[in-house]
Length: 360
Ligand SMILES: *Cc1c(COP(=O)(O)O)cnc(C)c1O
Image (tube, rainbow, N blue to C red; front, side, top):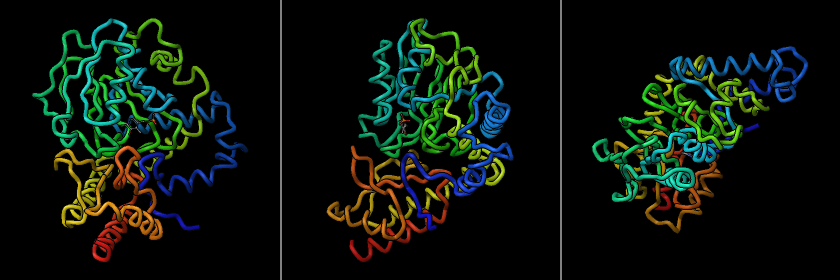
């Protein structure tokens, strides 16, 4: 077996130690004689897996007691509709900050359920810097303010948490768990699991309890945060294996990586050396303003785009997978989530340096 270095944006790399443990437990989970995939979600065994995952996540993110953690499905994209449905029961206007492609999709979907208002936008700088706090202008009767903390495709990340007089809603799909977080600043946080949490199929929602009573009456039972909060995310069958595997990742973050403070240090170091390589070589470029460069998704272009194909092919031959940029923007992108080891970034840097020297 030879595992290569995987820079995929999502579904993304998982920690090797987690995959090993899942393999050990695959056929017979802790002597119960069956795999997690074959268990009733209401069995004592699975309930213990589910509760430990939530407890470890609460511990990692220091989630206050007045927040519920929901284990949902439908991906982050379903949250684009669930947020206005669950927070729009009292009317009001959905407010958005636009900094990239995912935010744009959230805005388009939100408009179907509530009047919407663009509170701030990065359009004027070509999506290369996030709006500053003083640029954020809420509408009258704002129901919430939504933003995307890390635009996964553009590689644009907020360097601060916006202040708002209304519930702050954040799509954290690609940077949740990349470092410590003050959850108390938010009304709702959501994230598809397949970037920095676990496998695809699970969507994490962290919601402040007082917001559970604000849903539009027509909100489908299965889209209602309250349904999930009142039923321990087991109103129906949850994605049990994805929940279990995410729990193994939380355990790994806590007990092997030393928590999110340590993780943030490693992530900073990985990102800084990769950006230094890009900035230090005329052959590579990244257009994002320095304070807003993503520590999770690093897009870059080659000076000669006719070499893109060759770059990707030779990278793959060198064991560096999935470096193509998003299909909508082209170029390259290295996603360097928690599970991507520093050795992977070092190998990428060596490859990029050599490629620029010989082909540039
Ligand atoms: C990937 C991603 C999404 C879409 O996630 P799905 O789970 O595929 O719906 C939404 N927002 C951000 C920031 C993402 O990175």
